[in-house]
Image (cartoon, rainbow, N blue to C red; front, side, top):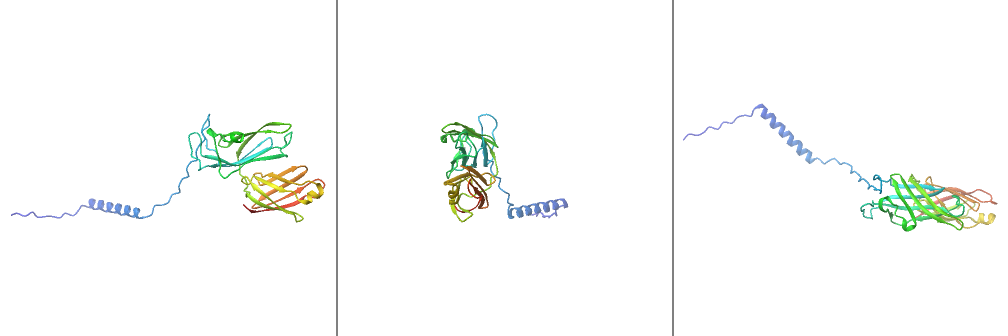
Length: 271
């Protein structure tokens, strides 16, 4: 019986090179799989857009917004509101810490103001098509662009009435801590007052006995805090100024018939 003789043939040079290349590719693939993947920063999701009734959609600037109406200030904070479910035409934004100054006397004078504040733990959700959604508080207005909004409110006093229209835009506001502040007057008198509305309003600032003794005025003051941390008000001849910075504040108080101005310091003492 004939047997077939098996012959082993060495591969050609080209085949050998191909085999080496394939082996290198396999090793590189294994090394790549074993090495940890390079971390890449996660892209932030694009904020939702407001679709107005007319015109193009836009994404409003988040953060502090400021405006004036005939000299009376208004301010609020626009935030993404994760609590409310986004639905058609109503983007997931909310307004918080809304503070508005209103006339106290006729004719209206920005130096004599009262204030309205919309606080609360949760933001007030926007309405349809960029509406501020504040009609239940007697307020009108809407976002008209990524950097523009309007706010309207009526006022009615004994001898005058009218409508204030604020035109608001994004701003950079100095941080002023909410909570209790300790106030010290030169001469040793001290009291406390409160800051609220996201650092926009200082309330219940008590006049010292020194002013009562020389002028007869007594009571408390509320003052709006501007974007630069400054506040100033003049009522019944009393002029009060205060500048906030880094948990502290300094200012003056003066009144007709009194020596002055009286120096003031204040310190944030807690929430």
